[in-house]
Length: 194
Image (tube, rainbow, N blue to C red; front, side):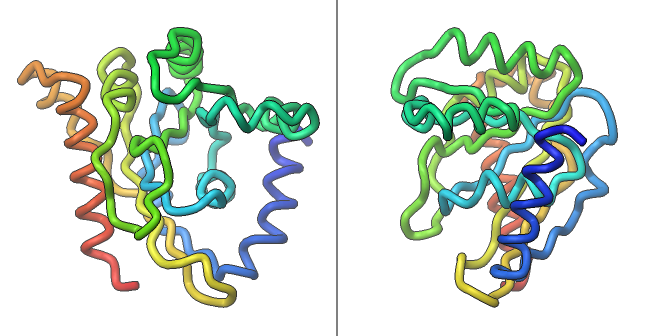
């Protein structure tokens, strides 16, 4: 068993019963080939929650500061996370993200860049659109719905793939593509009863 699978099982044991995690729409995630999962961001628990509900291994972009603790940084690397410098163009992180997709893996992004303190969606950063336009990945919008309260339902809903064909055809910019992804996340949130 890989370290990723082991870690996933441990996190499932801890978080799934505590937060009554309900996953929906996992059938929308292609079983193979490059995929970008774009989720809203409401808590530090979001990456492990998306990680345990997605049927495939995810390579998450994570803020550089998380890697400063040697032990935690080691664990993050072992579960395929890689660092990005916030607030600036990080060419290494962009290159690494494109490599992940070129190799047919799943890239996990939180386009808002930072957590929303009130749960409301903020405008996403252009990075998500950059990866979507520069790769042949299927882009899956994901919405985490609910609050991280003990024994309360927490839904992780994976939507239908974003229509990248029409976005490319209309020569949309990276920011416009991110805006379209965020709009799909917003629609998922609005459709789901809490």
